[in-house]
Image 1: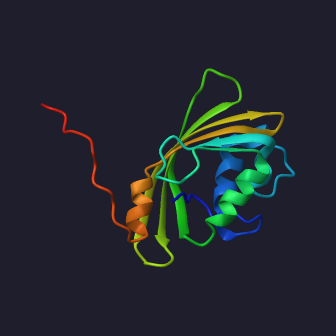
Image 2 (image 1 turned 180 degrees about the vertical axis):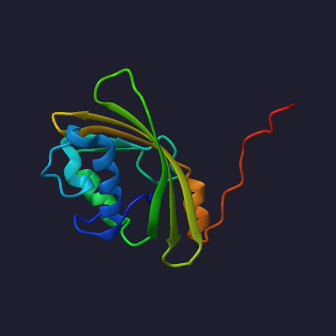
Length: 157
């Protein structure tokens, strides 16, 4: 399952994330965007390189982003985004953000402590690409679900 946000245009969760993006991306975003979804270009793309089974790897278009995030509403109560580091990109309009998120799973009361790295491309005042690196196992644990056993082999020392 995917959760970073409970993003309705006026939600408390979206307000925290929107404020973080507004501060970080500043005048690169149109001033009229009142939510994360409104910051996305009509044909913007969100990508999630690390997902669990049955979750989308890519969302194309603002409406697809809106629908996906609405389907996740209420899973995690986000308390804060913190420890933000913005890495410089040599490409104009590209921003690399590293941040932590603290929250609580609504149904279990278990902690949600996630680290994110996001590569955001802005053009024409809107986010045209949002590449989101996060650990889906953190969400699985917060929701009280069984974490699947790893098939990876230990790296010899």
